[in-house]
Image (tube, rainbow over all chains, first blue to last red; front, side, top):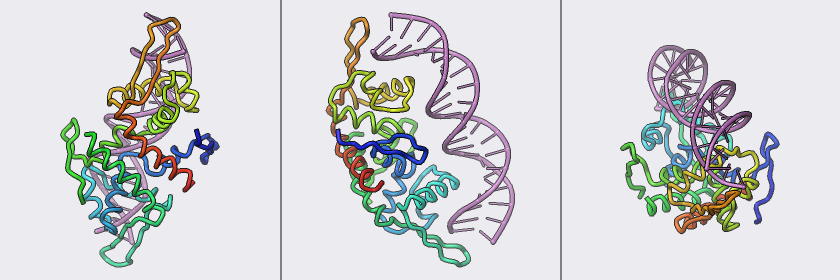
Length: 110
Length: 110
DNA sequence: CTGCATCCACTTAGATACTG
DNA sequence: CAGTATCTAAGTGGATGCAG
């Protein structure tokens, strides 16, 4: 087994797969990233339309976390009405193989 | 975008990536599957040692769900003391590329 | 050794209302 | 349009004890 022992911000032991889960895990993040990855750049509301059932609060929250982890980029236009665009960072794009694999597996094993 | 519209058991819309998340998502499942995938067959307690911090309750629960979804196989030996072995099913092994990718990404982007 | 049931603290997410 | 704050209901996981 080659998974190295790692430690999270609380000093708890983790293996590297747990780090990945911490970054892209949860109900919404994979789907958010999937859409940003396939569509390129999306405004807040456009993105929201791709996520049936997500609440306003959840979307902001998830986006903020993804931004903090360096996965997505947030570009704000200072205008009225406001306009904000989200896109994947370079680091974010490195996740696409995983997301593609997940998407494909889901389609095949439904 | 080629993600088809799908429906879950409650009639809610899902895209296929959400199904994958539903099956392998959460804090523990990817790590459980990772260990079963790399080590082959593991007894309950041996598996538990690989998951620092997991409680008894959580492990049973996660294993039961994975079994229900056809991802892992449970082999029980009727003896005292009990002995139960877990391993990946064929369907479970099809998840390994995803898990490998997650493991690798985590190691590279820590 | 493996698994289940109960209880309870804690976390999480939804609804709603408000801001620039 | 994009985001924040608060309140609260529901979900989740940990501790513990019991069983085969």
